[in-house]
Amino acid sequence: MLHFASERPISEASLTNIATKTVPSDIRANNTMAVFNLLFPATHMSRVELRRHIGLSRMAISKVTEEMTDHRIIRETGIDNRTGRGKRSTVLAIDTAYWRVIAIDLTQSFVIRGALVDLCGRIVQRVESTVETTSAITIDDVIALIRRLRSISDLPTLGVGVALPGIVDSEGTVLNAVHLGWSHLPLRARLEEALGLPVSVNNSTRMALIAERFFGEGSPNSLLVRIGQGVGAALCVNDEVVDGQAFTAGEIGHITIDPSGPVCACGRPGCLETFLSSSRLHAMIAENPQRRTQILSEAGQTLGRVLAIPAGLLDLDNIAVYGPPEIVSEAFLGSMNEELSASISFGNRTAPRLYRCQQGEDLVLRGQAVVVIRTCVPTIRESDAGPAKEEDHP
Image (cartoon, rainbow, N blue to C red):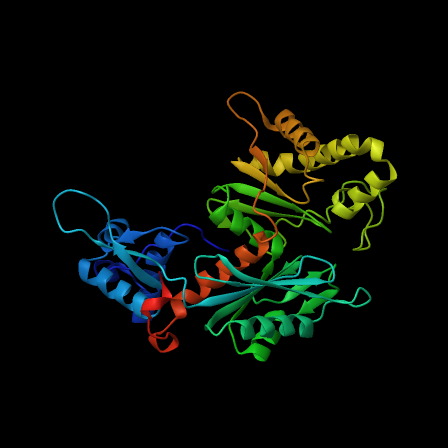
């Protein structure tokens, strides 16, 4: 479960109150992430401001920021531009010129999308690989694209992240990915063995939610629905992404909404995605183009009805819908919003804000990169990083 809120540092004064043993590396990692979280993705702060937010001593903040600078995690960007008395402070920001993360998106049929991403979560370069339509995507296909991305850049790779539509456990094992044909596949272990790099494997819709939270309009209590070849959702409660006991939180695509409905790819009848997947809706519109608005309105109404109970139960702030713009249309969102309002709103209670996610096709890649960055940054050591060069930054 990913926490969005900045981790609090462990100060020397608080150590006496900790019953369990805390080793120095724990303190270092905790304080490193406290600084990193305040600066991520694009905030500039002085050491004085960092101290004020975190609560460390001057010596402690100097030590951690010096280490992070040496490790090429942060950099000095110049002097603050405030006016008035007193010495102006040196401003710090995340260093984007050294470390690279490789992110892989397996949500499209027969296409593997990959990207090199900097420590701020910005895409540096994109690469795609197409698989024969008669073949399924294999681990070897994924490894080949990762190696191709590594060969493009001479900068060190911090880690690799792979996002896919399906159920993934905390060990990076793909328990079930219907559209990929994968079941109980230890993907993380296989990739780490082949690549010699730390690897993170996650559900693609949760990665989209993380990107929306950091780079879009997401809030601490929100839901993201992704409409594509399937239908999935991801949930954020009190700034934590919910996985669920069986890692199936948000797996709404295979919930039966009509037992007499068409048979789904999973083998069961009447799953939600048999009514709402983009391929299904495109086919319905192609058959009856004059009913386009009605088809999309009915689809939005169906999704609104399905989400009304969890939205009301959890008192969500907003719901983002991500999908093809010709599907997630005004007609779709309008009828969905009407259904949510009719089901939830009463008295002082209002339905969550509903909106179309605007981030584009890099959403999953950027979200997966964030997870790798936040996982791997505390593990960086001085021996991993090269010296800062003056020409690295303008």
